[in-house]
Image 1 (cartoon, one colour):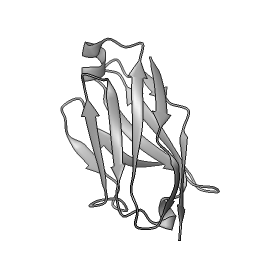
Image 2 (cartoon, rainbow, N blue to C red; image 1 turned 180 degrees about the vertical axis):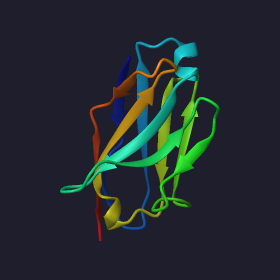
Image 3 (cartoon, one colour; image 1 turned 60 degrees about the vertical axis):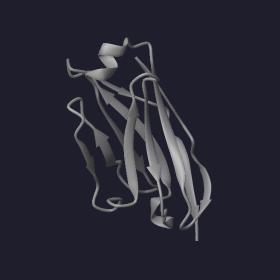
Image 4 (tube, rainbow, N blue to C red; image 1 turned 120 degrees about the horizontal axis):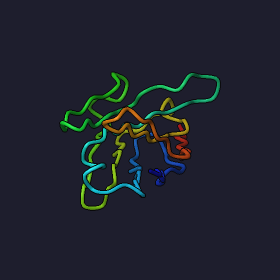
Length: 118
């Protein structure tokens, strides 16, 4: 299983970005059963969970992004999205997507940089 994150860039505070995480080398049923999450790591800080979409289609968000970010998944494309609205300078970080299979294996993408200017 491979994860490819994309969509990062430079955006002004208050703007929007949509990150994508494409899952390859996994059959559709495998993707369907995965918990997929977005994490981020800002300079000098630990990696933190931002949002997650479970195999049972529950979603969860860090308090800092609730009401601003939305995680969604397109099963036909085996892709998970993170829609980021109303971004703030504090959202500046490298964003990573992570997938956990039903057997408990963890897979990580390479990260995509998001920079929010004030």
